[in-house]
Amino acid sequence: QVQLVESGGGSVQAGDSLRLSCVGSGRTFSNEILGWFRQAPGKERKFVASISWSGGTTYYADSVKGRFTISRDNAKNTVYLQMNSLNPEDTAVYYCAADRFTTTHTMGLSLRPLDYWGQGTQVTVSS
Image (cartoon, rainbow, N blue to C red):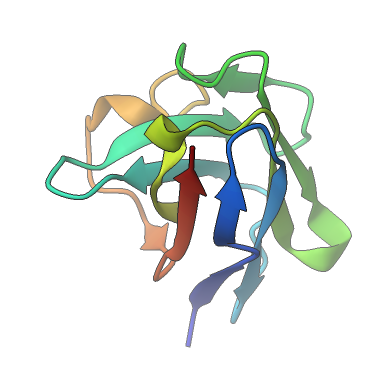
């Protein structure tokens, strides 16, 4: 069974940092684009960041650029999201996703259903 499992969420204060992890199992994701999305209460799920299979190309939503960093370790089948300078607007459930046929720049455009999704991890930022 192919799975993506997120971890690392929690409740923090504004200005704090968190590091999310997403581990894949059941197959290797080393040849796929990996990304992070988030869904705030009552809102649609939105793209956060994506990374190419090699890690050499990354792409971010404007709202997190300069604060969040996506990275991956193909040997561990894992993608990370380092989140710094968190603010209450970052409060959401964060999901990782993997897809073979998208690109880092189009992953967030909903052009097609993505191959795999995790179950999500809650991040709550209080002021």
